[in-house]
Image (cartoon, rainbow, N blue to C red; front, top):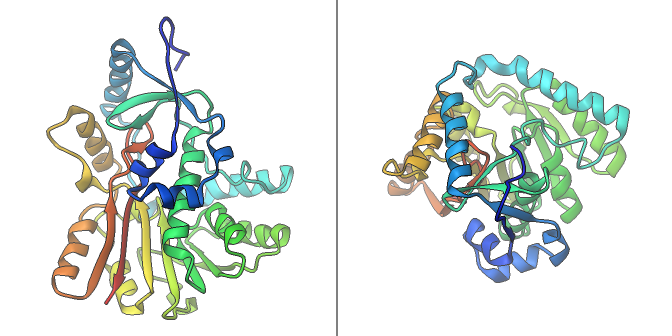
Length: 317
């Protein structure tokens, strides 16, 4: 997207907006995010004409045959993607930039029920990093062990390690280059992250996992790949009884079918075959006294197509 012309409505991301995005108090936000983290977090609120152009672009893509469905048969795509990251890390060194997944590429983002144009290309990834920092403080601080499922490049685990170096970490992913990336992180950072090849569809690799009553589970844009096939994985988590499970995922139930803006996201979500029925399943388990839902919150922020930063946190009772 080209830089908008004419009258430009430029705004800066604020602590107040982060509080609304996270669903937590200003105190929780300022405990986890520093003033320097918001430097350069500027964006432009689009005009009606620009929004109309964005919608045309979104509808064109939604009506095309270019959208790839998630599912168990897509493992080779993830192997290739993480292999590309691994090659970059080995060529250019390990950093937050080289560990950034390829899907952080959108020039227009969803924010508070409308579209915005971020001035810097890393805006989305920086927001993601701040949201993680907020939720890490809220849910992971008391734990001795954290397992990330679908850990990909290991960037999230590295962030946890830097904030809580005393926490034992395990990173699980079904694509082998992910384990190699974690080895690179361990070499560079001195972390001792355990890398496990684990398939969230089939549960292959679960025998390599250790759970205690102080183990936390996190997923970031990982359960989305399971579509409606999340129940074996969820049943495993309930059986293992971790202290807390924290998910930042696209939750289709949060969208309002009466809004055109949200219907674009619903359409995209369904075409991608993303996570479906997870929130209802958790609510049912809570009704029967098996779990307690700690927090559910629609972030109202995401890529041009969807909001993949909504929070669901729960624990077994």
